[in-house]
Amino acid sequence: MMTSDQKKNKNLFRAVDNQMSNKWCLSPIWLVDTSLDAVFNQQLFKELLKFYKDIDQGITAKCDLVHYDASSFNHLKDLILSSVGEAVAEFENMSPPASPSELPFEMCSAWITIMPPGENYLMHTHPNAILTGTYYISTPPNSGDIAFIDTQEIALDPVSGTAKIIRIPPKEGNLVFFPAYLMHEVQTNNSNEGRISITFDLKLKDSNLKETDKNVARTIVDNYERFVAKTQ
Ligand SMILES: [Fe+2]
Image (tube, rainbow, N blue to C red; front, side, top):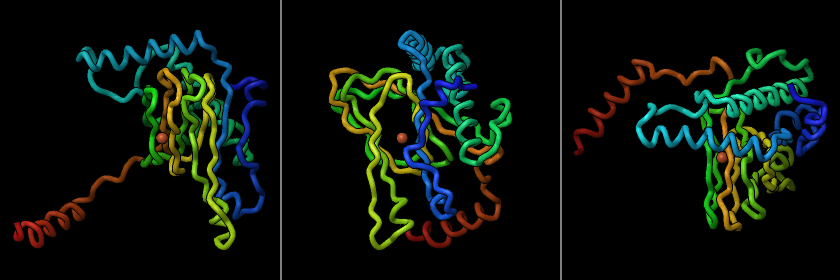
């Protein structure tokens, strides 16, 4: 669970509005200061690099980082899930879950990003997830803000509403959470060092991807055979 200090540091970038239309279009973005320090981050990075080196060298089988069992990473995962629990409770006006197992979300993917100087990441979303977050391990000054395009105002007022850019500078030890569908980019790393972060996606539990139905598969194969294969 988060301490009271951590709670104080959590804030939505936009206040929750009680009007239903605004709540449905809220696109919440929020920050959590974990108070995890540079020593923790160094240990975490060491663990994560081992994960990638072991796969690179064929020592371990390929798998998603989310399944990696290492002490610092496990601690961070617990903190992420308790932070999400607090946010869900606040947003839905209910009690926070007693443990991560009661959360409606589960982490479905995670990966480390080392963004070299001069690089940026173009606008994108994260498909097949509900909620996305990033934890900052090493962020030299001017190493690139995360920026979101927020179209809430257009949804509420199509005539005079405008899209807004919300920029959040990265800070070591901070977590930023946002809906996975929200368009975002990482701006250019104008420092002389790598910008290191972990990004993760969460999905609703029991919302596995839909299996391809036999009838759907038959239709596609049939359409291929009737309309595509004969023209080749
Ligand atoms: Fe992203």
